[in-house]
Image (tube, rainbow, N blue to C red):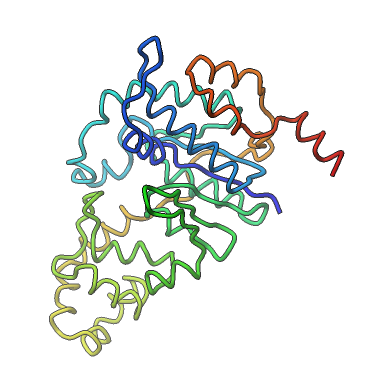
Length: 301
């Protein structure tokens, strides 16, 4: 079966920037994030062996979530200047490898990934590469998986539905209900006051969606007590808002061209020249086979 790997470009870029110390070329160009991103990208291709690949990035413009809730990610600091200055080089590496880049104003990279995964589902296996656990809500059986690259002593992890259930105790799609109740400090999603992660996990594991909870408050009272039921009642508006903020949309106005995402359709000489310019010589050996090399291998198999 074909395997489409969708890379959350911003998540990988930030991870690379913080994982690699300051690194400059002999001309003084700062390239630690570019090197780290390129290394993670090529390792991902080697480890996951995709037949197709694409990268998504956030846009600078505010998303619909910022418009709906002014507190959404409001306290997040600006992108460090040293990292911002490397973004164009990262895009140059991706485009030189002939990997399509998808980004849509008003939506986050997660939304774009969710949309592309939905369009590809059934036609190919989809693996989402990210360090952001929000994407776990997209996991579906063994058709849509989430791969989190290793970091430090932490080994890489591949999530299918079974692994997610073992870790969380409920279905992947119900991650949005969990966040609706518990909130998410990193994204400044409010959640319901007084519920917390432990309470949210118990409620979601037992009842599933917040719609079921609010449609059956008497059952909540019986199984979780009057105090929990009252917290839900008092926090209903926040719960509904939080679920909308936490939900990755899958109908972004964008179309996947699977044929354009083929891994081996790139100019190897051109990317080698770019890596020489960036002084990434150690990465040249990690480049995937180009069309000619692939054809030769297939001929002699």
